[in-house]
Length: 173
Image (cartoon, rainbow, N blue to C red):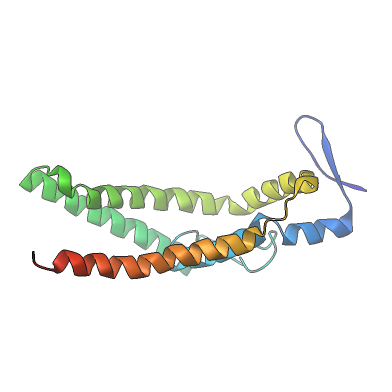
């Protein structure tokens, strides 16, 4: 037995070395890896080495992924600014506030996700300690498969629904 980490309450987690590697591979990182890869196409979670184990996941300040995330946040800020100017000039129309709210939420969530990405490797390590301490409670649900199905479903619905909404909105009458 090897003591991995001592928690502030002086409780220690005992884990056998051969089971640590196997357990980390099936943890949170393995389950949400697909979601993070898809999110990076949209400029979210600028992380590197996400296809490896949790110790290899890194946030880099000088990277294209970070610049892409910052670009998306700034684009949302510019769009938000234009909507605020539009409402200042034309007056506030409550029916047309949805785009402004969207860009507002998009800008601040982009900033928050960059902050989370900065600390992601630490979060994964802490999460893996919690998962290791609770491994006897594991269920039979395949979370990785569920995350892949849900992500694919949401993106598929978005790809189909957005053009349909635009088509019905542009129809006269």
